[in-house]
Image: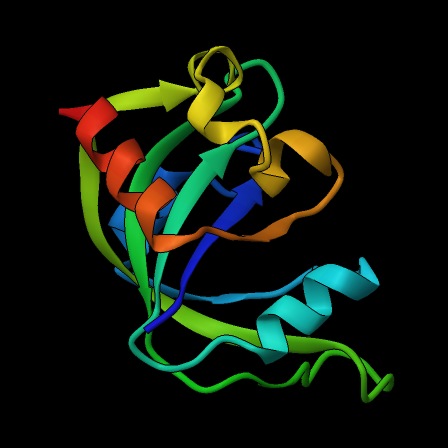
Amino acid sequence: MNYWLLKTEPTVYSFDDLVRDKKTVWDGVGHPTALINIRNSGKGDLVFIYHTGDEKQIIGIAEVISEPYPDPKSDNPKMSVFEIKYVKKLNNPVTLAQIKADKRFSEFRLVKESRLSVVPVPKIMWDDIIKMSE
């Protein structure tokens, strides 16, 4: 199992939208490295949903429920999507400021590559973020 962080602008599609919809196709990703990360994901992987913009916080957890596949809305075969479903909202959101202030996350790609919209999360960091949210 792999762990990921998916960034979304909450005014476009928020975690509450995922709660309402129960599942969605995660699309609209154009960054080449983020697309590679999508293609490296698999059914059963867990993802943090991170709100960008004014919030800058991890808000909840979802699960990848499909293997990655070509984006049906695109003629470009490199464009990939996957489907996710709602798992749970975090007890307490974990902010980017909290993560940046913690030395354990100094090499976290969320911190080092701020433009990356699909970020791998090492298991140890996943567990640390879960603890921070409790």
